[in-house]
Length: 175
Image (tube, rainbow, N blue to C red; front, side):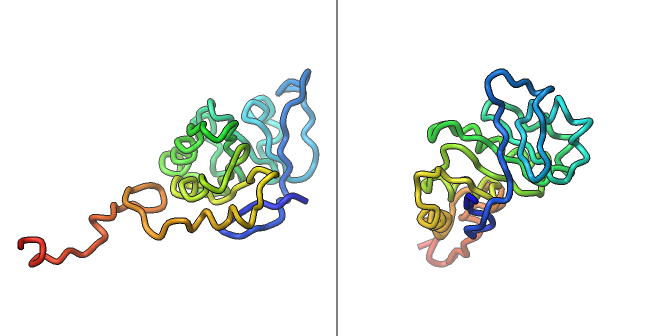
């Protein structure tokens, strides 16, 4: 069983990611029993039959809009966002919008070309689970979540910028 990082711990991944194979269509692909994460197009095509299952999650490609799930976010236990390559940053916006605008509170997982260097920033926009590249050491990647001790900017995880969180010495500031 594959390992992932979830809530800052390395754990066994009990979900299976479904990717459409050549010749399969979103409406016709079979959804097996058990915990499975399906592509957005499969969710949309088969929502009537799989929408009530508590063991079905959804994954979004980097060019898909999170608003497609606005009516379903409270019922989906896992939403994954695919990073097709390290340099594609669209998944950060998707994650932030799922958390901040759509109020998603379940597991938000980064999948695809996920590397240690990205994890700190991914957690800042709302990811709490990471399926790192299989050719990398997951325990080394876990350390990426604590690469920095503080942040300057606001984001999902910190609503106030650093200058508002630091007490200033008024006397020293005038001199």
